[in-house]
Image (cartoon, rainbow, N blue to C red; front, side):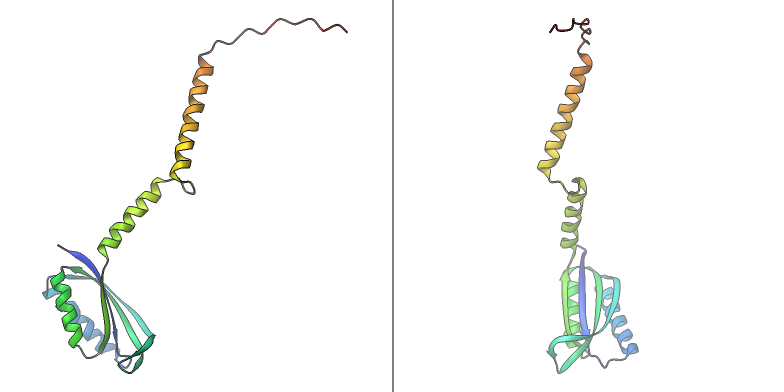
Length: 154
């Protein structure tokens, strides 16, 4: 079963641009040989780390979106563990989250903005009552105007 994963890894801050390109190309080829595909690669640049990791205060962040199965992720993580320039990595499965967010978005689109389901039901009931009253008024014969009444004597 093909699932979508986000793989974020941090490489050493002293790594050159061409070495980063080689590392990313190597990871893409590993994903391909493991039966997955790389959907996107986003270089987030150099950022300060929250705490020292292997005596580094900064790191270069890279985010990859992968599609594949669990065995592919396991193999890529194994390779990342032994790759010396990679100081941290994390893999997160995001396809379930995307399904949940699509469901929430569809539910939100079906509702009237700013009104809950109770307000919607009350509004629908009021509209039905108005339509019934209009239909009853149209079916009722118009009563003749009463003749002029005599003015009241004082």
